Image 1: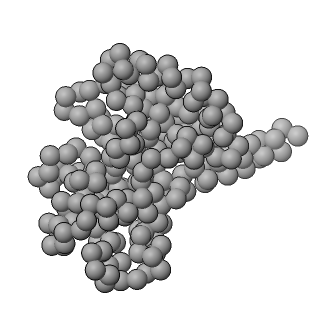
Image 2: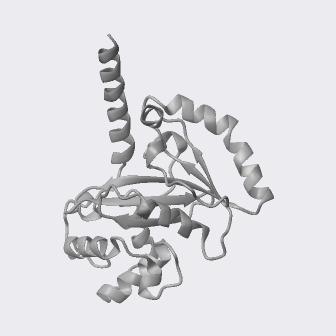
Image 3: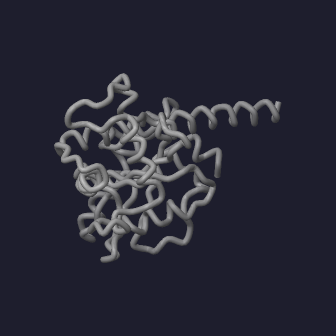
Length: 230
């Protein structure tokens, strides 16, 4: 009976993790039905090349005044790399297709955890936002997901501020936790700002970076995947 219960828990955890980590990211050209060469857009080949260019690097390595990728820095990179002046709204369309953008809290939970997340938002989130306001800190909703349509696969780490600003990095899948640590440190910036991070269920507890500075305050959302991985 004990073995069966453990197997059932593993199955639930696996389903929860697949649902959360899988996300909704896909190469935009795939969503457009692979139409290429449209005026004012990237071709499929250019989009895949752009994603490869972003892997494991940050805007400051291109001389841009950003520590993490944003819509603005991506807009500049596209112009420099491809010689294309895309409309800012088009760049935003690519980001949304990749799965980057504001999401409702229930969208950051697997189907088994929606109720717990909604209760957490009603009970805990107001306290976090008040503390952030008192310390002039920023609140980010942070998670990761797999971007479909690329080879090799690409993992995207993203943070969306309470004001809706998106910051992200693209990485090749790896067991190395250092990119996640680098990401959250860069969120704090050179000014070492205090940041509160609402961490969704795409991270198990044992995967989250350890020994972070006190100015980085994580707040994990309820997650059956996280609970079982503890």
